[in-house]
Image (tube, rainbow, N blue to C red; front, side, top):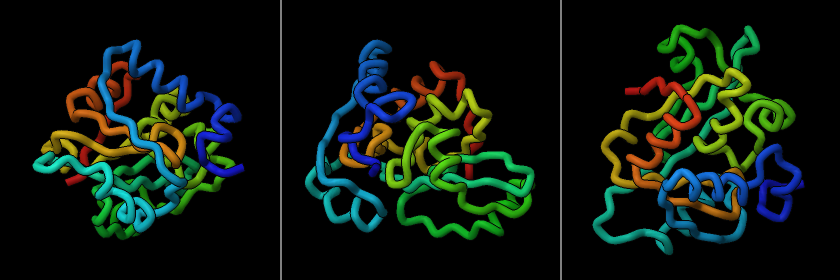
Length: 176
């Protein structure tokens, strides 16, 4: 199975159910559908189709990581930001980090590789996944992210994204 909406009903929470929850909470978003985007390069190839001129937007990349003590982390960064996992682990005081497996990603965040997203914290908070986010998100007007599948992109206002995190009781550790 891939990470597209064709298989969303095999996830603990489907993309449609997430979007319905956003609607119920009154969190506005724009949604774009497209072919599956598996990498930042894939996303860059289509982002011009969705861009609103003059909009202060943040496009993100997301890393599902684990440490040697088997703790899980979701790290959301500006999509072009370089990251050194060893330096990040040292900076956060959590030791060596490595990428989590596809099975653990599904178990802990309820998504498949290629669809990693801050919105997956709706599942992650229940599984003690720690969330780190690029401080650039604080300055953005809107943030582009996958709604648990990789053939859809939602654009949330930064204030609505923060309201989402409040609703699910997700603590954010900001990365400088």
